[in-house]
Length: 471
Image (cartoon, rainbow, N blue to C red; front, side):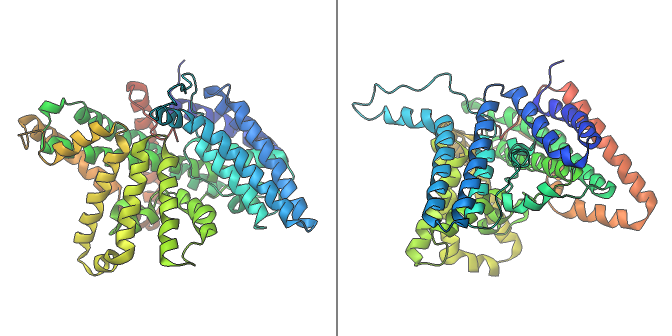
């Protein structure tokens, strides 16, 4: 039987949970390491050795940094830290950015002899697990945590599936104690199961359906596009990327609870934001925290002149964009948000706080949608054409009969997407569950039905993209 990535994850999860709880507590980190490496090796049989190399290197450097600190050698500790950072970023840079740099350098006269590596594939999740491994060495250097003496426990932290391929990015100091001693209980397992089911439903039932509609509108030939159709396409992609990524994050967080880990929330209803600043406090929270703690604050953060603050924010957002992919559209996407955030920081944010809520909300979503247009079109010229179509450039038609039909046919689904991107369903669920045991039973049945529907979708549909596989 051939598994898609998500189908294989569901099958593998059920098997490995049985193994995990069948072994003694002291052996569970070893089991986590083994099953995570096997899971990764199933899709990346060669690059699993790269991951093992990363584990060994950062484990050793963590011990060296701590030893140098204990022996009163801050310079030695710093040297070890720099070496670890260089090795990790060199690996990430080679596999993720080598061909990007070579392709652009070839445009310079005299450098045409450079050639990209045609068979160089990006290891899945390398950005996520590299950042996690780096956070460990940095935390040890800062003395925020002790070096991990058990390499199996450290390896389990770096490789824990499925979190390693789609986040959230977990800082070592946040799970240090949990690696040694964590809670295993039926209530926590049940809570994790509910979170996992919610994530699975968001990914399969909402993100995949929205994604198919986005692909439909995107595939319309340029000379046949309409203003309404172009907007509908981008709106569906806006929902697809949210429910896809937040769905995978919820599955990872839910799995973590099942085996005793408590990971930070990665999304906090970003589409209810009333400013771009608020949006980025709610979107991909773990990445924002990582860049804040390990880039922005070390650069000086807000504890410096206004000019240096702007420099620091620029560096963070340039790196944020580049982290997402080796393509100019991601860099432009990062700088686009740098510009918006600086405008808000310098004068607009206070005005947005005083403006009516619906005005601030529309403003935020307007610019978020355009941000996703930059994000999804690696071909900048194709993105520019699509942007023009949204405002009637390159098309004389506002809406066709087919657009109206598609809008009416999907209006209920759009309403579900909008509702599901707000806290309201969670509040209703909490209110109903608190009322009676009968309601709790009904909600459990609803959860089971959601799983059945998700599995049925996976069986009957070949459309199951994983948007963040290349990050």
